[in-house]
Length: 363
Image (cartoon, rainbow, N blue to C red; front, side, top):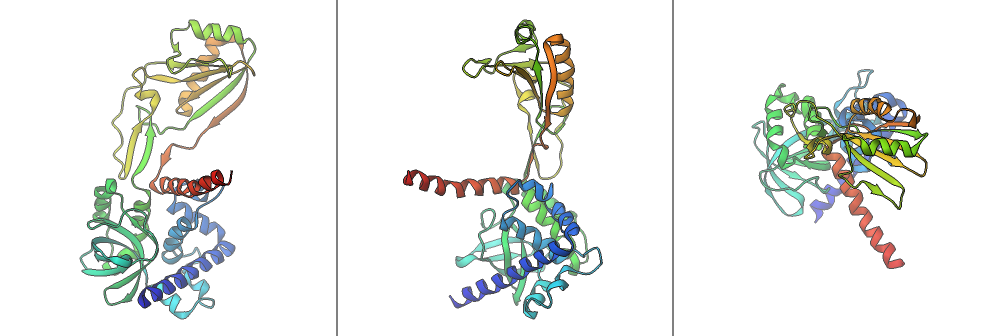
């Protein structure tokens, strides 16, 4: 119990020092901070939406760039807190490394028997926080590791277990990296941490290999009756996915077409490709047409901006003077979902369930 308490105190002290360092860099080197954050998480802070990154996600990034990346001035960020943190904390953080380990055994109390993949031997890894992924023998994890004794390391932040679906790609990445052994983790630890957090990345794309970006355009209708008549008599439009919602005053059509020639799905490491529903359908379609009779307006929805532009041009030809002015054009971000984003969503769901149950009981 005493050893666990000491470990808890140590990791709390070191993580608090990293948090203080993050605030200092945010205040004085914000552009550098944002650029490094965007290197670690594609899309940067904005990728986390209005609520921003959770504390664990922010700490994951801090444990890379605040400890391994030089500032634009050439100095290391850690120097900024030498007067505010204990000498022990600064020394241990300076000696820490963002390492990959292969798990050999899982013991009680969060202690792991691990093997260094560079061949430097076995060690004991002591964790405090819950891991991202399952700690099982044979798995690979990446963690900011602090030497606290002979062959003994403490983990800061949450250890990230490489997803089973990405192990082969991760092993290939690790084998491809090169640096002097004493500098390997300092040079490549961030690359490995980013891969462990991002892979497998789910990427939706069209049959010709374009990443999906949901795209929409809306037009007023000068003559709704004429527009609906034109759509109903055109053989390229069918209502195979529902057709009409009389109560809401909505009419729907799929715009059938012959898609481009298929391209072989990319082979980018760590990526799982999924064909968009428009091209995966038994009868592929360019996009969807929705007519709102109450406004009245017509909306065109397509999987990419390029297909939306084509659909807009063709719609003008089909509807002629029945089509009014453009009222909206919007394009979503690329439909690329890294592992860390799925994990953040799952955490939000887990946190929301107890609140929902409590609300129901209170009602």
